[in-house]
Image 1: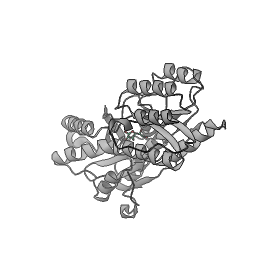
Image 2: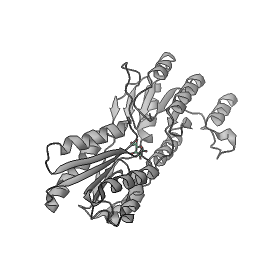
Image 3: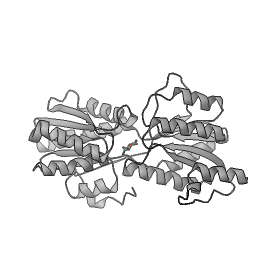
Image 4: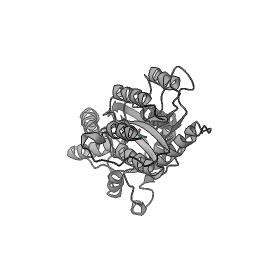
Length: 320
Ligand code: GZL
């Protein structure tokens, strides 16, 4: 048991003098989790929730941060296989490139849970389930808000710019598809440009600067795939002498506290919720898999829309 505890301490960086978490006493399960990084308040909230729920469910968690690199996630999964964890979970930064390592986990007899994002593989059955948002629905809800706003304001033309998340990631692909499918056929809507902001605040600012240089006040709508990029874009809109939320309709996704605070200031018009609190479902699903029980192939949390259609001051603290 001592070796086991030492492995946990080393694997989760506890041996490097980082804040030492006591290994779970008499753990019910050893879970290896590869997290994408810490690129957004959403991601940080997701990590925190998973750590808290692991303690609640007496799961020993080996959590590794990939610092936004797919190769680091693949290496982490191989380490989990070598440690013979009971269950592997990870949030794939992009959808492609996982077949080989997932085949290795399958051969090792270790079930794999996808958290937050999905993968695209040649073979079926390489993962047990995916726990995460219905990103397509999030895109639909964002567009449905825009259609209501256009109707309410009697707008006849809307020029839209889109700042997308990480290219080839599930949220980027599906938030774009849900939005575009919903506005398709509405002659008021014109997409001026889609540009990759990689879910990063700094890139969101760069993208907005570039879009303002190209289109200036021709832009009527900014559709941003996450709050970080939105919060990077807003100061750039103001530097250009334009009023976000008034001169431009600003639509964002995630629903973190900072974005809700800016919604209350009137500088964002709509925030679609994407909850990072997936830890409870992850632990319950991992324990079911260890016990040999069947699990749902897809687990979607319920999510809502916050907007200027209702009093934002009634929104409860977001916790991320
Ligand atoms: C969505 C998640 C996205 C968030 C971003 O579930 O994958 O990644 O929307 C985060 O904030 O970077």
